[in-house]
Image 1 (cartoon, chains in turn blue, green):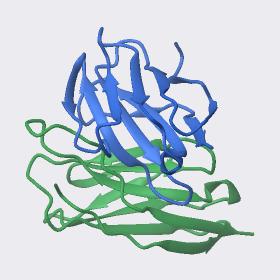
Image 2: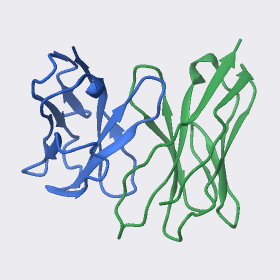
Image 3: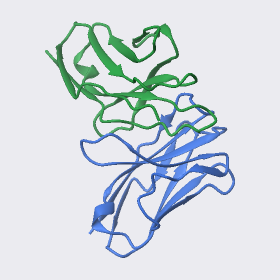
Image 4: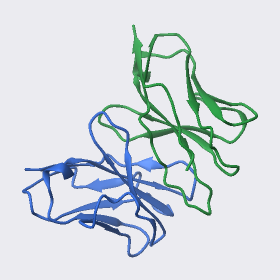
Length: 113
Length: 112
């Protein structure tokens, strides 16, 4: 595609439900990143992949959060048993390789009620 | 991980030059310095990247002194549309991976 695509754009879920956020990176991009951003704050690193390998997941807040990129393209960030504190903008980015320009998607606004 | 420090906010006026300095005292030999811009309700957008000396593109210039412990993003003749948050990032070495770690950024407000 022309850019990084994230879906859904908005997600409202009840506390305790599981959610899956999807990221479709720019075709051919090796690196894929997930971030969470609270209002007025900078993006908070969650995890990143090179191809299908999850290189670093140190930013995932707890074991309710997981991510995968099974074929080295589309990635899914899953949050199990959602809590109100999980409400935030979740952003995905991709880049050709390490330390090159990263392109961000429009994000998924998650609201847990 | 090289930590960055930059001013929380800056005000400027249309037509002026804006210079934002970022400190990164612990920068590693293989680290690059990258700046991103973020408008409200949008994802960050790459502006410029450099390793040493000076880099210039159609949007901005990046000045990096010889010791590389700081860098300055220069935005020439800003307009109202340059109002945004600007983030300074220092990339980890390839061996350690690249988290693209964002700090708090500098909120630049351009006034008429």
